[in-house]
Image 1 (cartoon, helix red, strand yellow):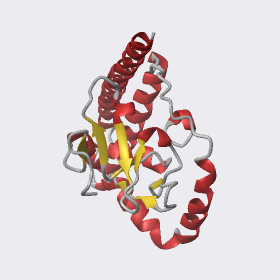
Image 2 (image 1 turned 180 degrees about the horizontal axis):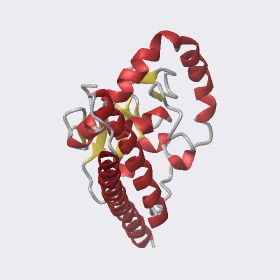
Image 3 (image 1 turned 45 degrees about the horizontal axis):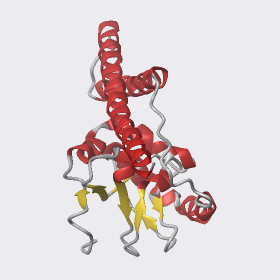
Length: 218
């Protein structure tokens, strides 16, 4: 999309560090397998007073509509099941996703067998985007949820790296498996709680921004 307000938005594409992380981190593939994807291009409002979720917009390359990212959010139960991309409720086309390298291999291999599934998925989309709540629900991520994210990511990476060593012809000794398990337990905990801290910081911004608006209106 060439015509957008450059004073209002900055663009995130594959060159942005967070988007590059999405591409190269094999653990992200787990999200894509349940349909939690990210589009190839994001518009981020430059006004930093709000949290990232409220500042994120998704342009449709087919009709140039700029959608709020809240259309595809957990509060609307539309954050998942987006295996083929994001449904544009303006032109009914699909906004293409940015693929993780590992999920790209899997989806690419399945593509010849997936035509009917894609058509059924597309037909089901309009009903998912009725009666959306476009007011951000600022709910912080609890320690329990952060722990679940940590164990899920660490568990996947443990399995992935164990298979990787096996494919390389490494002997899967007890010591190697234990070392791999400890490594990804620590790695998973670090990843989960860093993500929790980042998300909660953004949510706190949204809460403060909303409180400021209420005080200004009163």
